[in-house]
Amino acid sequence: MRYTRLGSTGLEVSALSLGCMSFGESARGNHRWSLDEESSRTIIRQALEAGVNFFDTANVYSDGSSEEITGRALRDYAARDDVIIATKVHGRMRPGPNGGGLSRRAIMSEIDHSLRRLGVDYVDLYQIHRFDPHTPLEETLEALHDVVKAGKARYIGASSMHSWQFAKALYTSELHGWTRFASMQNHYNLLYREEEREMLPLCADQGIGVIPWSPLARGRLTRPWDAVTARTETDEFGANLYHEDDRIIVERVAEIAAKRGIPAAQVALAWLGQNPVVTAPIVGVTKPEHLEDAVAALDVELDAEEVGLLEAPYAPHPVAGFR
Ligand SMILES: NC(=O)c1ccc[n+]([C@@H]2O[C@H](COP(=O)([O-])OP(=O)(O)OC[C@H]3O[C@@H](n4cnc5c(N)ncnc54)[C@H](OP(=O)(O)O)[C@@H]3O)[C@@H](O)[C@H]2O)c1
Image (cartoon, rainbow, N blue to C red; front, side):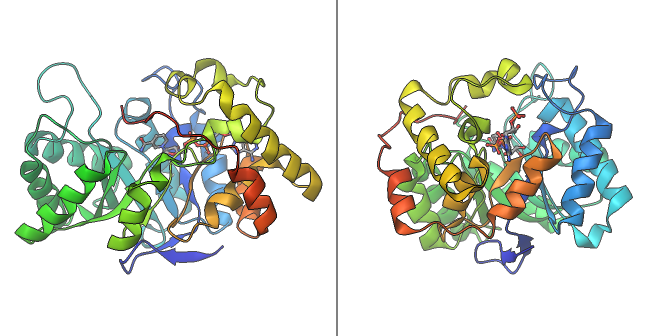
């Protein structure tokens, strides 16, 4: 495994993060495709054995059961000092007032709920899952700073939002001497490259670690366009992210993979990994071989001609994945 620093922090993370949205009780929340505890544990253990130290979950994934399963497995298979646990806050956890969002009230409650479900006394990276337009940014940033100062999180990060919002958050933290976001978890892959306009240059300039979500376009980049899996049949959020025009890029990935004699997933991940602003893709794994591909992709180097073929058909997309 290769390790790298998360942006300009001193934190060493594997160049591959395991997405724990794949793990959870399928009857809880809206990820009916998620793996049960036993299958999840097999993959988490496999990831640890491969040297992956970076695990990403969220309070909302399968209504907290992703945190529970991930926490139990990491406690059983790893020492706390050896793993980097990232989770998120913002999504709605219960109906009624203060059940979601980024108010001081919500953040202070949700960090404690996440720590309890994970079975740890701190997380390494506490991320805001989305921007909350209904809460003053200062309120959110000061609460996050206080979470860090209370020892409940080591670093803070952000996820999909507009670049102006992220830039405002960075300078507002600096103005007040509060803990600054160390990372951006955004939607970035060969089928969705809108982040190349503003967000990625901003992150490069500001020393922000970039940890893209859905780096394989939720599996689209790994198989023929019309293929159906247990996940594609019930992945409501993923159903509207990609469009027929993207098919040609999927075909190019498959062509290059066939020429090299490697799985398409390795080509798509290698492309992402070649961008120096990317710290670690957060890969979704539902079968052991998915993880093997993700690890193998760290050693695949695409040449300029291959990169040109993969990038040429891209056309601008409407902003997607912010909600
Ligand atoms: N911050 C956010 O808003 C946000 C949003 C989404 C996700 N995330 C994070 O990002 C992580 C990854 O998201 P994702 O699961 O959508 O990512 P992804 O890596 O783009 O997609 C994962 C899916 O791709 C398929 N796959 C993966 N490797 C494969 C391989 N080698 N060969 C064939 N198929 C392969 C599997 O599909 P099948 O299961 O259909 O076989 C798997 O479920 C999540 O777990 C979560 O931690 C964050």
